[in-house]
Image 1 (cartoon, rainbow, N blue to C red):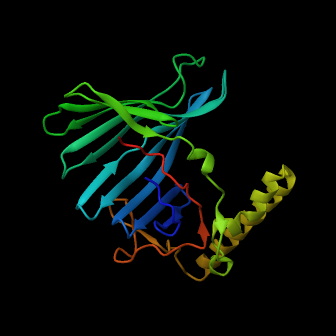
Image 2 (image 1 turned 135 degrees about the vertical axis):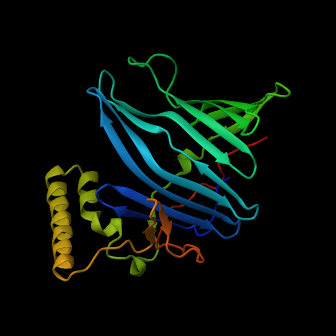
Length: 270
């Protein structure tokens, strides 16, 4: 399912730490009583001709109407430089809910060294009971096109997920309220860098990047001189390392920058 109204499910994304690089996100859908709390830290490892980035952090999807919380992990992002450059998701993603007693394990399959062994974006998985370990459903397909689901009790298979034309309908973010854009918003901070890169002017992009970095260093020195400690505006870090939304009783307000969503969702359950 996908929302047709960009203001139906607003979200706030913020880089809450520079070293290590941590990004936090909080999204709310007040119409459907859904909340998403997420923070992520990429941890790359290099292996010569390729590298992988494990995504540390915590991801929670809360269905408040049913009082259900789903926690899910992330696969690893793999970049291969030789012999054929490319990037793909690999590894296992787990999704579980203690209240319902169900868990899903989805395996993102990697291609072989020379690109053999099937297409990219292949997924296989199982949905099972946490207590009995019994497999209830099996899923198979490609996450960027279509995935089928098989009921193990009947042996019947049907379409579970289908992208169709939704990817083609994706549009660039739109600035709808310029006066509400904070000076720390990425669209302003990195705007000159982005425009130079889009034009292929690498020298201009490099100069603009240096200006951004110099300004950040100057602001940090000014805070240190005044004895101030920087704090994330919308998120706070708990003792266990988790980042949480500072205003749990308040939904996220509509943002000045919005992404037009497809008119129909990619998820089809027949």
